[in-house]
Image (cartoon, rainbow, N blue to C red):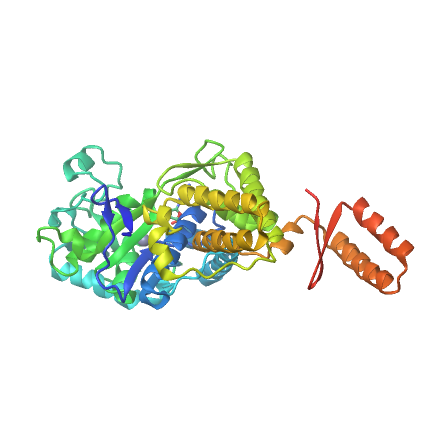
Length: 477
Ligand code: AMP
Ligand code: ZN
């Protein structure tokens, strides 16, 4: 079954065919590490984590190279460092560490490569030099600017043409610019700000060139898939294409944009209670706070509950519903703990591939619906006779359910642990102690004591399940 992805550049769904099946390349624009990430910033890493899981399953784990950068040179970082009176490295290290901690809680696997701008300054300067050599940029007053008129396909990704853009220009006009849409490749740093040497004077790169230079250096051009939030399509990705193509002088080919990235994927925006998240409006939900307060899987489930290209409105009821769904599925996994899931034979996949919704442009709501279809099937089978036949069918349905869950990166916890989730440490300690005392009382045939403990556990709303490997417990729902 083919994998189909929506490509922003052609505005259509296309069958995904990597350039080299042994080395599928993917780049996603990562965080600018000047502050904690907000919940909207979590959508791209989670969505593309699902894509990477799917690609690894399809092409083999070692045949996918995923790069997600860290933007550690940026005006906002400089401003924060100046405000706190510390070097930028202190700011970027602090917020990168927080970001990685959040990603772990969301079950987002680390990318294969996490390039940092500060480690790739030579490549950035070299790419700017190459663009100048090909006549697509000019140096003026310590700046190097990309000359948008030199790249005929400018606007192809975002569907804007240069004349319209100029008419509606809201970009910075500067005396050294030939055209208001020309954008910065290199600029002098302000006094006190960090700077790096270059043939055009000391300074720092523009944001767009950081990504295109790192992509070329760590993955090589063209890459298969480039991803990010829809707000990045213009100008960030439009400019990346212009730079990546013009650094190699291919600006006048038939489809020059193919020289840079072959598929473009953009996630839709997340709103908070139907409003745009905005610091100035004071409605920003920090991911870091959220994943300390509730399980990361609940956040991840909520993020995947809408199709990635659709807008997603973040509400309390979305979180409650996500938690309920996970509780239900964990409950089912807990009740069927004694039935191991069966390894599916590859041939069986062809007939009823559980991952089919994801192959259709990463249809995560479809995948979630299918998980619940397997869950209903298991529920029905639990009441069926004869048990051996029903259990074999459960093992099968469970394997499919879990395969899909693994691709979504959910249901990754131990069911019994999850179901204990809301229990305080003090209560858990008391319950564990009571269960041990009960075992001791039973061993001594002290039935009165065993009954007393059973009643105490019932008071605590605890259900104990005795099994071959000892007693497990959970709170009654
Ligand atoms: P930034 O750190 O601002 O460069 O953003 C990191 C990533 O988060 C980019 O891919 C943005 O497109 C994405 N992003 C920012 N805000 C939102 C939002 N409200 N909803 C979805 N994605 C977002
Ligand atoms: Zn980027």
